[in-house]
Length: 369
Image (cartoon, rainbow, N blue to C red; front, side):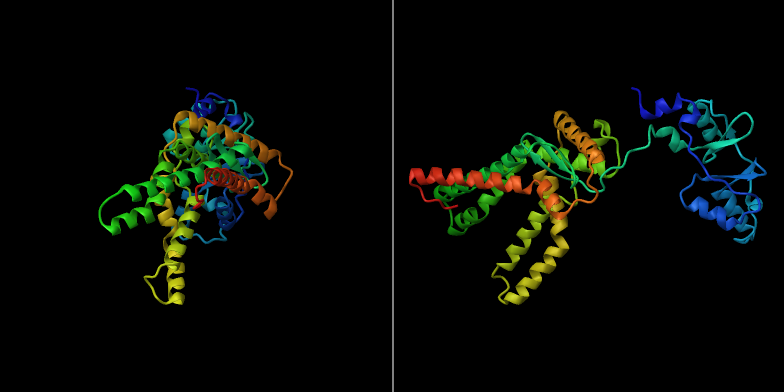
C-alpha cells in the first residue's frame, strides 16, 4: 500500500524540508532558548558571516546550563557540530542519518554550503500541510446517513433525512409505550411488578429498540468522523475507525442530564422542595456526563460497519470542503441553530405525532400521548 510515509521517503528532501530561523554565535543563550521553545525545529542553526558554523539543540543547551552558563552568555558556548543533507537526497537517506545519529533534525544545505532549511522525522511522515479544520463539529445520525455541521457550513444527509430521525424516534417511543401497556395488561404477578412495568417499560423498550436499530451504528460513525475532524486527522477508514465512539458533546449527555434532574426534582423521596431542587442540581452537575457516556457506549451508539463508516467519511469530506469555501467568519446564534438540525428533527417528531393522533382519532381510540 502506498502510504503517506513511503511517498515522502521516495521524494527529494527539499519537498519535505521546512524553513528555519538561525542565530549568530554572539547571540544570547536566552534568545536561542526562546526560539527553541516557540516551536521552531529542535535544531537551531548558528550562522557566522553567512557561513554555517554549528547548531544549538535542547540537549546542547541543557549541557551548557549544567556547566554554569548564564542566560545572557553567548550562543557559541552551547554550539555543537551540525549534520547536513543535500536537498536532492531522498527522504530515505535523511531518515537513515536521523536513525543512525539520533539527531532530532538535519540541516538542508546546497552544494555551496548555503542553509536552505531543516528536515525532521515528522517532516518525512506528513504528506502535506493540513488545511484549517473547523474547531468544533456537530452532527446527527439519520436513517439515510450522517449529517454534519460546523456552524457556518453543513454537509451529509439532507433536511428531510433529519426529519425522518425525529419521526422514527417518536414512533419508536409510541411503539414501546404500547407494548409496555400490553405487557402490563397481560402480565400476572404482584401489583408492584405491574406498576414497575408500566412506569419503566416504555423507556426501557425504547432504549432497547434504539440500540437494535442501524441508527445506533450510524451514530457511532458520526462520532468517529467528528473526532477525526476535530483532531485534524486524515479522513480515511483506517484512521477514522480508530477514533472513539463516545463524544463529550453528544446529545445523549444532554438528554441524560435533563432526565436525571427532572427525575430527582419531581421525586417524593425528599419532602422539602428546595432541598430536592438543590440535590437534583448537584447530582446532575456531578454525574450527567459520566452517565451520558455510559449510555452512549452501551445504548445510543454501536461500532459502524465499513459501509456506514465510509458514508460518514464522505459526509466529513463534504463538510471540510464546504467549510473552506465558506465566506462566513464566525456564524451567529441563529445560523448555528438553523444548521444544527434540531428544527428538522422536531418537525419530523411533530409530523409523526400528528399522523398518530389523527389515526387514533379516526379509529375512535383515546390519544393517550
